[in-house]
Image (cartoon, rainbow, N blue to C red; front, side, top):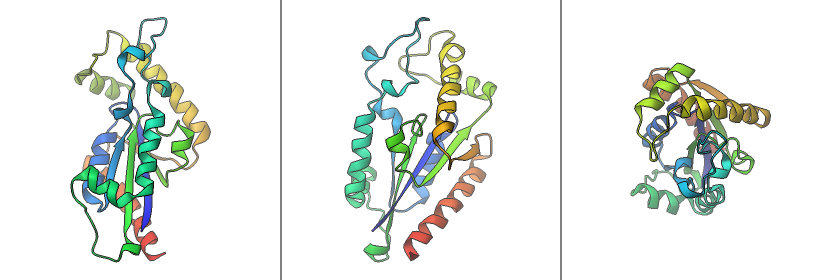
Length: 202
Protein backbone atom coordinates (compact mmCIF):
# COMPACT_ATOMS: atom_id res chain seq x y z
CA UNK A 1 0.00 0.00 0.00
CA UNK A 2 1.37 3.40 -1.03
CA UNK A 3 0.24 6.90 -0.20
CA UNK A 4 0.13 10.38 -1.71
CA UNK A 5 -0.80 13.59 0.12
CA UNK A 6 -2.07 16.52 -1.94
CA UNK A 7 -2.43 20.04 -0.59
CA UNK A 8 -5.05 22.34 -2.13
CA UNK A 9 -4.57 25.80 -0.65
CA UNK A 10 -5.48 29.31 -1.62
CA UNK A 11 -7.32 32.46 -0.73
CA UNK A 12 -10.87 32.63 0.57
CA UNK A 13 -13.45 31.72 -2.09
CA UNK A 14 -10.71 30.80 -4.53
CA UNK A 15 -12.21 27.41 -5.41
CA UNK A 16 -10.34 25.11 -3.00
CA UNK A 17 -13.31 23.04 -1.91
CA UNK A 18 -14.73 22.76 -5.43
CA UNK A 19 -11.44 21.50 -6.86
CA UNK A 20 -10.83 19.16 -3.91
CA UNK A 21 -14.27 17.54 -4.18
CA UNK A 22 -13.92 17.14 -7.94
CA UNK A 23 -10.53 15.46 -7.49
CA UNK A 24 -11.84 13.17 -4.78
CA UNK A 25 -14.65 11.97 -7.05
CA UNK A 26 -12.17 11.02 -9.77
CA UNK A 27 -9.38 9.51 -7.68
CA UNK A 28 -9.96 5.99 -6.33
CA UNK A 29 -8.97 5.44 -2.69
CA UNK A 30 -9.11 9.14 -1.91
CA UNK A 31 -10.63 11.31 0.79
CA UNK A 32 -10.54 14.93 1.99
CA UNK A 33 -9.57 16.62 5.23
CA UNK A 34 -10.76 20.24 5.28
CA UNK A 35 -9.11 22.88 7.45
CA UNK A 36 -12.39 24.76 7.83
CA UNK A 37 -13.72 22.00 10.09
CA UNK A 38 -11.06 22.78 12.70
CA UNK A 39 -11.96 26.36 13.61
CA UNK A 40 -12.07 27.09 17.33
CA UNK A 41 -15.31 28.26 18.92
CA UNK A 42 -16.18 31.86 18.10
CA UNK A 43 -16.02 32.74 21.81
CA UNK A 44 -12.27 32.12 22.01
CA UNK A 45 -11.24 33.78 18.72
CA UNK A 46 -9.53 37.10 19.58
CA UNK A 47 -10.61 40.52 18.31
CA UNK A 48 -8.23 43.14 16.87
CA UNK A 49 -8.21 46.87 17.64
CA UNK A 50 -10.86 47.44 14.95
CA UNK A 51 -13.23 44.92 16.49
CA UNK A 52 -12.65 42.30 13.78
CA UNK A 53 -12.50 38.64 14.77
CA UNK A 54 -9.09 37.19 13.95
CA UNK A 55 -10.19 34.09 12.03
CA UNK A 56 -7.39 34.31 9.48
CA UNK A 57 -4.71 33.18 11.92
CA UNK A 58 -3.41 29.69 12.64
CA UNK A 59 -4.17 30.35 16.30
CA UNK A 60 -7.89 30.43 15.42
CA UNK A 61 -7.68 26.80 14.34
CA UNK A 62 -7.24 23.52 16.21
CA UNK A 63 -4.17 22.60 14.20
CA UNK A 64 -3.25 19.93 16.75
CA UNK A 65 -6.54 18.15 16.05
CA UNK A 66 -6.05 18.52 12.31
CA UNK A 67 -2.61 16.95 12.56
CA UNK A 68 -4.07 14.08 14.59
CA UNK A 69 -6.62 13.50 11.82
CA UNK A 70 -3.87 13.38 9.21
CA UNK A 71 -1.84 11.01 11.37
CA UNK A 72 -4.86 8.73 11.74
CA UNK A 73 -5.07 8.52 7.95
CA UNK A 74 -1.34 7.77 7.73
CA UNK A 75 -1.68 4.89 10.19
CA UNK A 76 -4.44 3.16 8.19
CA UNK A 77 -5.42 4.88 4.92
CA UNK A 78 -7.74 2.03 3.91
CA UNK A 79 -9.86 2.17 7.07
CA UNK A 80 -9.84 5.97 7.21
CA UNK A 81 -10.96 6.29 3.60
CA UNK A 82 -13.74 3.75 4.02
CA UNK A 83 -15.06 5.45 7.18
CA UNK A 84 -14.95 8.95 5.70
CA UNK A 85 -16.35 8.24 2.25
CA UNK A 86 -18.84 5.51 3.07
CA UNK A 87 -17.36 3.30 0.38
CA UNK A 88 -14.11 1.45 0.05
CA UNK A 89 -13.25 2.87 -3.38
CA UNK A 90 -10.79 0.01 -3.63
CA UNK A 91 -8.85 -0.69 -6.78
CA UNK A 92 -8.75 -4.15 -8.32
CA UNK A 93 -4.96 -4.38 -8.24
CA UNK A 94 -2.89 -6.04 -5.55
CA UNK A 95 -2.81 -4.36 -2.13
CA UNK A 96 0.88 -3.52 -2.47
CA UNK A 97 0.11 -1.59 -5.69
CA UNK A 98 -2.84 0.37 -4.33
CA UNK A 99 -2.24 4.08 -3.83
CA UNK A 100 -4.28 5.92 -1.20
CA UNK A 101 -4.65 9.66 -1.68
CA UNK A 102 -5.31 12.23 1.01
CA UNK A 103 -6.47 15.65 -0.17
CA UNK A 104 -5.88 18.37 2.42
CA UNK A 105 -7.61 21.64 1.63
CA UNK A 106 -7.62 24.97 3.40
CA UNK A 107 -6.55 28.58 3.36
CA UNK A 108 -3.61 28.20 5.78
CA UNK A 109 -2.44 24.64 5.20
CA UNK A 110 0.94 25.70 3.81
CA UNK A 111 1.59 28.11 6.69
CA UNK A 112 1.67 25.29 9.24
CA UNK A 113 5.13 23.81 8.77
CA UNK A 114 4.46 20.30 10.23
CA UNK A 115 1.49 19.88 7.89
CA UNK A 116 3.23 21.48 4.91
CA UNK A 117 6.16 19.08 5.23
CA UNK A 118 3.88 16.04 4.84
CA UNK A 119 2.55 17.03 1.43
CA UNK A 120 3.81 15.49 -1.80
CA UNK A 121 1.94 17.87 -4.12
CA UNK A 122 1.07 21.48 -3.35
CA UNK A 123 -1.39 23.61 -5.31
CA UNK A 124 -2.42 27.19 -4.54
CA UNK A 125 -5.51 28.78 -6.07
CA UNK A 126 -5.47 32.51 -6.58
CA UNK A 127 -8.06 34.98 -7.89
CA UNK A 128 -8.03 38.80 -8.27
CA UNK A 129 -9.03 41.09 -5.40
CA UNK A 130 -12.31 42.20 -7.03
CA UNK A 131 -13.43 38.62 -7.74
CA UNK A 132 -12.49 37.49 -4.26
CA UNK A 133 -14.42 40.34 -2.63
CA UNK A 134 -17.48 39.74 -4.80
CA UNK A 135 -17.52 36.01 -4.05
CA UNK A 136 -17.00 36.60 -0.35
CA UNK A 137 -19.90 39.07 -0.20
CA UNK A 138 -22.24 36.58 -1.89
CA UNK A 139 -21.67 33.86 0.73
CA UNK A 140 -23.35 33.54 4.12
CA UNK A 141 -21.02 32.96 7.06
CA UNK A 142 -21.79 32.06 10.66
CA UNK A 143 -21.16 34.43 12.26
CA UNK A 144 -21.68 36.80 9.30
CA UNK A 145 -18.93 39.14 8.14
CA UNK A 146 -19.35 42.58 9.76
CA UNK A 147 -19.21 45.70 7.55
CA UNK A 148 -15.69 46.39 6.31
CA UNK A 149 -14.40 42.96 7.34
CA UNK A 150 -13.03 41.99 3.93
CA UNK A 151 -10.93 45.13 3.43
CA UNK A 152 -10.17 45.60 7.11
CA UNK A 153 -9.11 42.05 7.92
CA UNK A 154 -9.58 39.31 5.31
CA UNK A 155 -7.56 40.80 2.43
CA UNK A 156 -4.72 42.26 4.54
CA UNK A 157 -4.35 38.93 6.34
CA UNK A 158 -4.33 37.06 3.03
CA UNK A 159 -1.43 39.21 1.83
CA UNK A 160 0.43 38.71 5.12
CA UNK A 161 -0.17 34.94 5.21
CA UNK A 162 0.79 34.57 1.57
CA UNK A 163 4.10 36.38 2.14
CA UNK A 164 4.88 34.10 5.08
CA UNK A 165 3.91 31.04 3.04
CA UNK A 166 6.15 31.99 0.13
CA UNK A 167 9.10 32.27 2.53
CA UNK A 168 8.84 28.61 3.53
CA UNK A 169 7.24 26.82 0.55
CA UNK A 170 9.37 26.31 -2.55
CA UNK A 171 7.54 23.60 -4.51
CA UNK A 172 4.18 25.33 -4.86
CA UNK A 173 2.15 25.13 -8.08
CA UNK A 174 0.12 28.32 -8.59
CA UNK A 175 -3.30 27.89 -10.18
CA UNK A 176 -5.54 30.53 -11.75
CA UNK A 177 -8.88 30.27 -9.97
CA UNK A 178 -10.62 31.97 -12.89
CA UNK A 179 -9.77 29.07 -15.21
CA UNK A 180 -12.80 27.08 -16.38
CA UNK A 181 -13.47 24.40 -13.79
CA UNK A 182 -13.14 21.34 -16.00
CA UNK A 183 -9.95 22.64 -17.56
CA UNK A 184 -8.44 23.35 -14.14
CA UNK A 185 -9.48 19.94 -12.85
CA UNK A 186 -8.08 18.20 -15.92
CA UNK A 187 -4.71 19.90 -15.49
CA UNK A 188 -4.35 18.96 -11.81
CA UNK A 189 -5.75 15.47 -12.36
CA UNK A 190 -3.21 14.79 -15.09
CA UNK A 191 -0.38 15.90 -12.82
CA UNK A 192 -1.58 13.86 -9.84
CA UNK A 193 -2.35 10.77 -11.92
CA UNK A 194 1.22 10.75 -13.22
CA UNK A 195 2.49 10.61 -9.63
CA UNK A 196 0.05 7.85 -8.75
CA UNK A 197 1.17 5.74 -11.71
CA UNK A 198 4.81 6.29 -10.74
CA UNK A 199 4.06 5.05 -7.21
CA UNK A 200 2.25 1.97 -8.50
CA UNK A 201 5.12 1.00 -10.72
CA UNK A 202 7.87 2.02 -8.30
